[in-house]
Structures are given as C-alpha cells and as structure tokens.
Length: 408
Image (tube, rainbow, N blue to C red; front, side, top):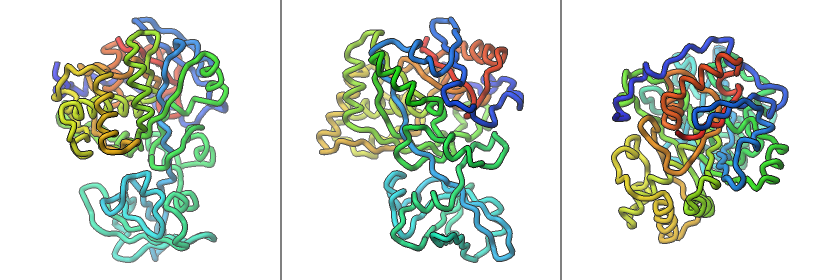
C-alpha cells in the first residue's frame, strides 16, 4: 500500500455531537483511559496510567505553551474584527523567539469579518497597553498583519496574555471561558508558541508524575508549536491531495542522546512512549532528520527539514540509534546543543514507527490526519478501538478521555 493512495473515506466514523466533550472534567486525571495492546483492550483512568506502562520506559512530552492567540478589535463603526495569530511572518524568527520580540511583530493571521476591515489601522486599548494592528499582504486564507504596541518594553507573549483569548478548538462550538485559560494548558507548559494544546497532556497531574517517578518511568521533553493546521480538514479523496501543515520543533542534544541510548538497549522493557500526536510527529521527524544527516553530514539546517513525503521516499535501512547518532554528530559539528527545525511530516499507513513503541492520545475527529496517524500504529484495529470507546461512553476530542495504544 502506498500512503499517498490512502482513501480518506476509509477513516470515517459517526461522531454524534453529544459525544464531544465540551468542557473538561473537574479533575484532570479522572478521565477514562483505554489501553490497547496485542489486540486486547483494557479500561482504566489516567490517575492509574502507571499501571499500563512498563518500568524503565521513557515518556516524551511536548512542553509547548498555548498562547492567547485570539485578538478582538473594533472598527470605527463598532463592528468586532477578530485577528487569530497563526505563525510569525518571515520578518520574524521562529515561534519561540518571535514570542519574546518587543515593540512590534509581523504575523500571519486569520481575520474574522475581514470585509469590515478596510484601510484603517485597528486599535485595542486596555489599562496596561495600546495594541495597533495594520493589515498588510493577503494570501489565499490569511493576512500578514503588523502588530505594534506601547509600552514597547513588553514582549509579544505578554501582549497576548494581557489582550488575547484562549484559542479553544472550533469543534467545541462555544466561546472561550475563564476555565479554558487554565485547563486548555498542560501543567508542564513552558515555551510559548502554540495555537492549540497538545491535548493528551491535559490529563497529567503532579500526582501522576510522582507515581511515574516511583516506578522509574522516565520523562523528557520536546517542543513542537501546534498550529491551527492540526484542525485542517482533508478535502481530497486521497491523502496525496492533502497538503500537511508545517510546524516548528525544538529539541535538545540531551533529548536526542536520551532517545538514542534508550533505543540502543533494544529491549521491550525500555520502550519510548510519545505523549500526544505532536510528540509522536516530533520524535519520528527526528529519525528522518537523522537519516538526512547520516547521508549528508554537511547538510544545512534547511536540508534537514522534513517534507510531507520524506518518510516514504528517503533511505529506509538506517537503524534508529544510528540515525539519532548522526543527528547528534551534526549538532556537534555545528557547535549547537539545540535543534530548531521545521517538519511537515504526515504519518499514515503503511508507515511503521522508527522511534516510539506506543502513543498516549485522545480520540480524534473522523477523516482527519490524526486518525491516519493512529492507523499507522494499530492498523485497521483503530475501528475496533473507536467502536469500543463509542459503545462504552468515552468522551471524544480535546477535553475528552484518552488511550494508550501500543504498535502492532
């Protein structure tokens, strides 16, 4: 099977509106947990997730932080114009660096009621600052917007925190509320830049971390800034016609070494488990970046960027440990202890995992690239898993219940 020829209609299932979790549970770790391994399904709750994870496993979390990306301005006639900040324009550096910019930034944005935004400059004033939006170029779906503010000493992250709203997913079909400011954010969020939460991590609490530590279940972090493209529907009949969104990842040399040494052990007692699809996309992208570094040690950073179909077209016979060793060597040769790079990777059947052994994740929308990723782990068993969840009153999507899925 060629991944490009995957029919999106094969990933359809019925998701009634009432099964979508519109709000989080009162306690993060009270969500139900479905555990799938070797064709068998077990039930549990997140607070007991340590019981489903072998000792000496390595859990990889995405420590990105959701920014309050929705800005609501009013034009001279009082009409609301919403500017949704998506990603930095080329005048700015990548996401993490752009968030600490002072005075002004250039961002690509969705603009709600753009027809009401003529040539005037929009202004949003609070007690603490004045924010000005100037509309520049237009692309097919977005505008380039210059945002500037006073006082100039504030960072862009501080500006958004003072003026913006949490960008909860559109399928919740409600406005952002005070509860979302805390609950649509993981407890370990660190680096500003995402416009959507890595939702698998929303269930984790300090109490869970204490249990993991007692069982010698290790933890490490990557950073992938989740873009609005994560909600982008697939309109084409096959995946070949779908353009996967591009996202920034940032990882340390220590994380790469942790992955490499764990893989080198080569025993099922030491699996690597991705917490969330963004962590999965990151660590699998690292493997393919390593393949490029292995084949071309003199590669530029741009050469290492992962395009949508690279995992199906690059050299396939390099071991995971050797690939990550090559990426570490590349960092060393370039005198850096951090890798900041782009990935457009799409994981779809018949892709097989190169780094991870399992995925902790929520239940995803039908006919989405996230569901394709699930199928690349468990194959057609995704249908059995999702039917079980539907039949047993699991809550779906961002604020819903979750699962731990071991690769077949």
